[in-house]
Amino acid sequence: MKQFFPSTLSRYLARIYTVNFCGLLLVLLGIIYLFDTVELLRRGTKHEDISLFLIFQMGLYKLPEVGQMVLPFAVLFSAILTFWHLTRRHELVVVRAAGLSVWQFLGPIIGVGLLIGVLQITVINPLGALSLARFESLESSYLKRQESLVSLSQQGLWLRQSTEGDGYVILHASGVKMPEWVLQNTISLFFSNQDTFLRRIDAKEAVLAPGEWKFRHATVNAPHNLPEEADLISLATNLTAQEIEDSFASAETIPFWRLRAFISTMEATGFNATSLKIHFQRLLAQPLMFAAMILLAASVSLRPPRLRGTAMLVIIGVVIGFIVFFISSFLQALGASGQLPPVLAAWSPPAICFLLGVGAMMTLEDG
Image (cartoon, rainbow, N blue to C red; front, side, top):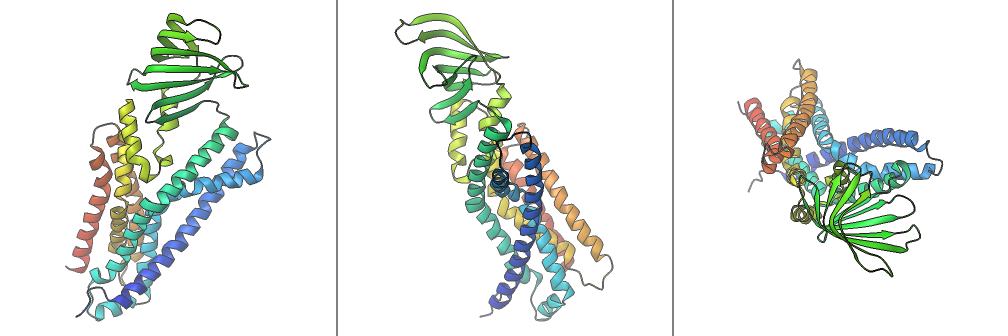
């Protein structure tokens, strides 16, 4: 029985594309690492306690996440390079002379693209999230010198900030009423810099006002003192609502396998998880996006070298890649603002590109 995808040819095409993809990706990652390291060196010169080794280490921690941003371009450009080489060496002419359709030799390459997408979801993204979290921790400690820490868990919101004078406070809230930014059922624990417990404030709610927290209907408990009731207690802070949201809602630092649980935690606590939902759906759509990139690359690259305008078609393919990127960003912004459902915002770009690629190949190859 004749195979639709001949095994020998499929392995050959898949191997050529994989080699081109890996080589191009390494070049792109090298360039990105060089520029990121230079920027970190520039920022590190302001702080004497940052070593050169730490700068290189931070650049490596940041690389996997930044590398995921260039994966669609690497898939597109390596496909263009692969098809150009096959066309230039007349190997595709031989394949077609053997009676194989364009779909039979595109299949193995599209299969590699799908596999790359699955690997990004299951392996690359979780590793990139962990390394980016480590990078942000080092950046916060050595470059930004931030003292405020925020964490979100199933138990609610946890926040740590410095207090006026000598010490810090750890604040916990079971929930947050948005968009007023009213923390509910708060517990605030005050410590000295020597980690000596100073006092505790329990309040039904705490409101984040410009430059201060306002605790309403609070009870103050201090060692060796009786509890004291207060209608309003103020605590100075340099935090803003945007800074708190940015500190824990970075989708890139959350591994794919934990995204759904974190989304549920955010919604249960009272925060808007739309951006995380879009990020989750976008990751699921990556295999389809990579397949679409390969089809678009084929539609502009599978031309006999004697035909005029081949170089222009390749340039058009490169432009298509950037157009896809900006369209994706635009639709994601519409989704984040609530004008599009998260599923539609994430899946529309790859679906549209895939259909355009299939349509272009049917027009060019099947008449």
